[in-house]
Length: 79
Image: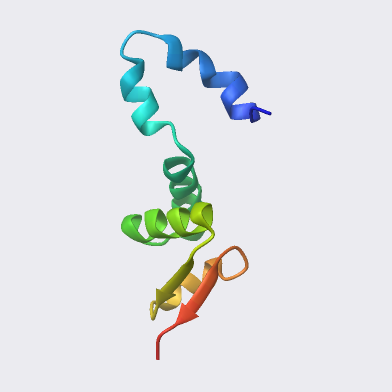
């Protein structure tokens, strides 16, 4: 089923230039924005975390800022 966001803003995908909305309107971008607002970590780290979450992958890092996401992600810590 579509999410609430897709129901509210899905009409944008049918507008002229919807190609640009489709490029930006994916779960990785949206999740990265959520992490950026919630966790205050670097922009690139937000995308890495979002991609790992959506692919159910493990993040391998030594960056302690990822501790804020430990409950949501599988993290393998480097020493």
